[in-house]
Image (tube, rainbow, N blue to C red; front, side, top):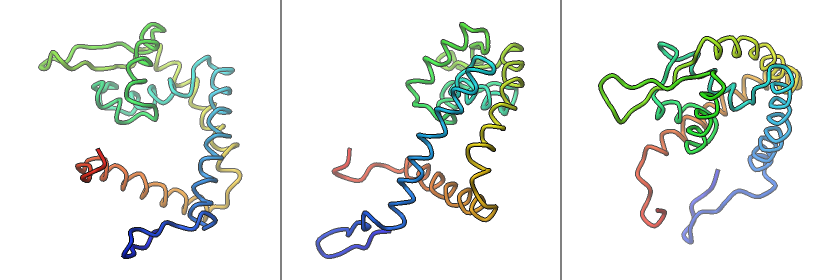
Length: 169
């Protein structure tokens, strides 16, 4: 939280609980994500990024998404999504499908092999979430983290849709 003053915003103290929480989030991400990635590679031969794409496609209507929708949902940059889809298509896990009414748009759809890989990877992923994240927390902490981070994500999504303020383009 910051306070507006006559000379501009007063930013939080760098030692405040909010700044420490941000640092802890970054350190936890840095520690856990590579470990999950290694575990998925070792167990089923796919990366965490590939798993993320498969997860989104498995949960999508018809098990497919327009490339633009996939780019909005996955946890990698939009520019990286196209490269991931190329790699995953070569591996036979997904396929591109033409949009029936918009020739400029393409779907990414999960294949039968992609569904099998997802089903093999899901227990590894869920076990990793438990071992590296959930098991370290108390039930009340889990609920607070989930609620707080969801609010942050929701706010960021709303702000991303707003026009940039003057002078910040």
